[in-house]
Image 1: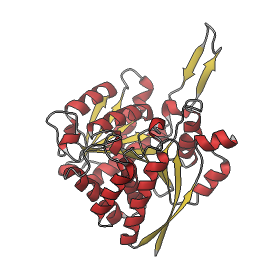
Image 2: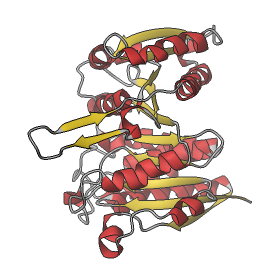
Image 3: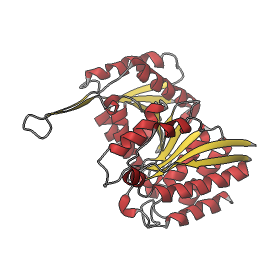
Length: 353
């Protein structure tokens, strides 16, 4: 029997609750799919840090390197300095395993979930490929003379040719596989007119595109892309973009598809251990209330299985999520509309588990 070893990192806030439902779904499709799942839980997050002073030890990264994938719940807690655990854990995993693709499907399952008038599922079906290891997130810079009238804060945007080329190539390969409507397209989103360093994206995009004559190309500056995503989301197929802009654009995309309650992402290095997570935050105020929506985590499990080559199991999850939203079994994606475990039950029922 095939066995997949999954590192589970529930993290902070609602992470434990939503991950529990994701694991229920994972175990159910594994049983039906004829494969086994072995999970190893890791305690790292705010509670562990405050109790022990340990954030994310090197031994944890070494252990995760022997896994097939990582499922993350959420990181962030107001009791800890803003960004500290995020950089130690999320950024640490991305950098340690060189997870250069942040993959964000943006798919609408029911017109009632979309805040844009007149748009339905046929209009919202795109994927954002966000570069995941460079840009302003590289952490190069700092603060000089902090707290004085002469304080200076500096953050460097870093782009390497290798980093840009590999993520653009991934986007073209993905578009070719999706073959949306028989007319695949990749749109480059940048701000090269104002941030001239991003000219490297323009030039490399053109070079990579030459190797994919069957894939059409388009371009939009980030401000225009935000406008078009709201006005005409049907124009997009695969979008490729630098790290910072991708972070912003995908949150907008999450609202177009119905909200953070269904938005998931993959942090991917093809062929290597990769991490999957809901893109919502830890929402500490909802912790322990059994009210957070776990659909985004269930969607993250779907992406995880697809990455592991378990396409039929991934498709079953996608079909179940689509069914419960199309039929109105789940009325809202917001917190509190359903109990967390109730949504897990509904999805499991749709799976026939």
